[in-house]
Length: 249
Image (cartoon, rainbow, N blue to C red; front, side):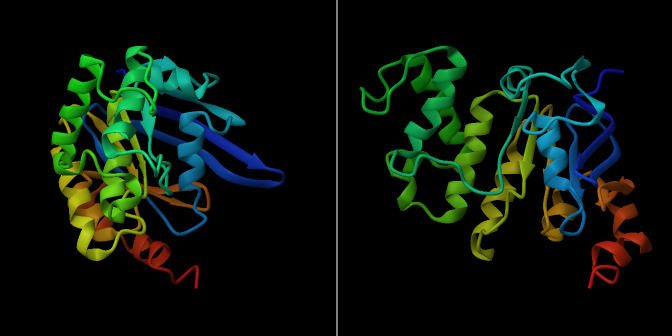
């Protein structure tokens, strides 16, 4: 079976420290899969290995059955593996529509310059309009990023990832830093995403994890502690012991 994303025996060392230890995941098309664990568990390192930011010392990464272990980050994007980051990476002095137009134009092979005529390319304009509707940000299309609430900026960042037409979307703490009153908009967007899109996300907000995920992997000290359904993870005494802090106080 070809999985949307599969890792086999992933290992990564920094000097004498092994931060990823034989991690294997099998992510099916349409998955809603959370990756959780205490700080320092190796979650972001694992995402960096999947996306080519870091090279593994051992193991393999397959996307749709294609071995991309040594592929460049751009080639992985071309195969449909797209990520967001913990911190916003937006063009703060461009508008929402302009931020979305840049990745759309790149994917379509079109020339687009923020200082040129905005929206002159019909194909780019149509895709941006669709993304704005999907994000629920149509009324803010002409607003600059610096004028947005933090939760709205998170939506734009996810929109940029969606503009690249992912088959697997990796979200690194999508709710990080968002005030409680704004976090609902991120969850509502995630719940509206296409059913066939595989989503793997790192998140510390366990309410979001238990509401959105269908399967959860728990990492501890770079290794998989356990994997299971929401109910299995919620009721696992090892997870309560390790993730909720008694071993790490």
